[in-house]
Image (cartoon, rainbow, N blue to C red; front, side, top):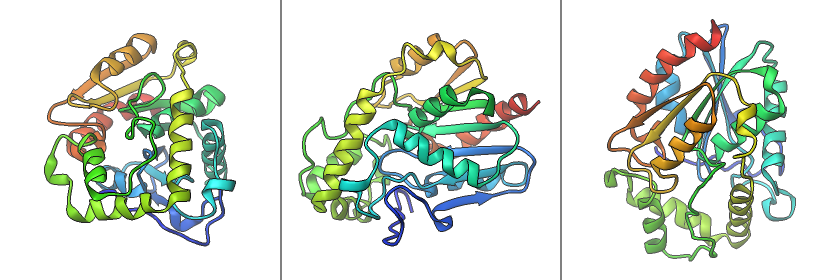
Length: 267
């Protein structure tokens, strides 16, 4: 189910349990996949399954889900989220350079991690990435606890309206009714907006694949072009009939581009 959340009440504020981390495949080369703001590891399922015979694929739940006391103890900056992912990577004992793949907020964390640990990364994949410009899903205002508001927010993410199911709307509605969690999400949204990497991108020399929805309204196509211009080793591919989450809307095409890109990273 699209946008299925991991609600694990016993998880710590910043730590992740094993059940919150997808770890598939036995290949010698590893790809770590990071989801966006309202996401989960399930957002990579249709990418992971066809690649699991050839690669090890790890998709952790970012510590921005509803578990724990997020408002008082949760992350306050992109750096905090990068720290959490660094802990996961260390715990998974990834010895060789690996590829980082991120959508939206996950793309920004991927960039931040690569800037911090450039020798550990052999490839970078950005899909609708934050870091240069990202329009706030709520335009910076406190989410309103109504199903109509939720439906309007989700409609900005997807090109295909058939993905906006009543079940999905109800799931998000239950999330934003939790006032403490809604405040936490706004805090993370502001932290995402405040972490601009424009002046640091020149430091990234690793091979980079940019996959972008042509109809992305959150990070418009011009943002993808800005990334390509400032990343010396980047290639850009647009996906037609696709919004802000190409790994969800066009998983087959997304996987096809990954299959062509990954071998050069691990050569």
